Length: 173
Image 1 (tube, helix red, strand yellow):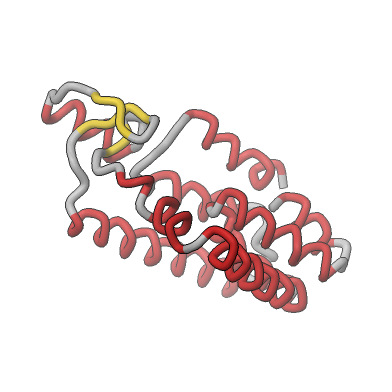
Image 2 (spheres, one colour; image 1 turned 180 degrees about the vertical axis):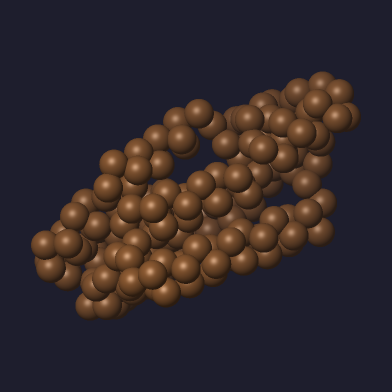
């Protein structure tokens, strides 16, 4: 995603869009930075959109929908990851034992309502962040990107310390 931003600044639209799409297809989280492309480089935005769509279609054709379902559903895990904001609160308040689930230490259980509420909160925060960036005529690769990634980390049902590194390239800008 950082390479995509760098190429966007250098008006390398195709390379920027393809880099963003590769980042999204690899890690998913860079999707929250894509509005910066819309603000700064619409041609790169369309390259990213088309490439990500094509990559998603290839993914489903080659691997089936099960892979998409696993990514979207955290491989069937139902608990809050203990390092996440919500998970750490649940762990402290409920004093439940930590269990290993889908390769991560988890506690409690995510209700469908909580998942929907977090998704609504995240989308609302992202809309506010990018609307504010558009109103201030900022390019979005600095403060707005840090805020967007930060909002994602706060609302995520999973968190690990290395996720904090996602903030670094955008904070550097």
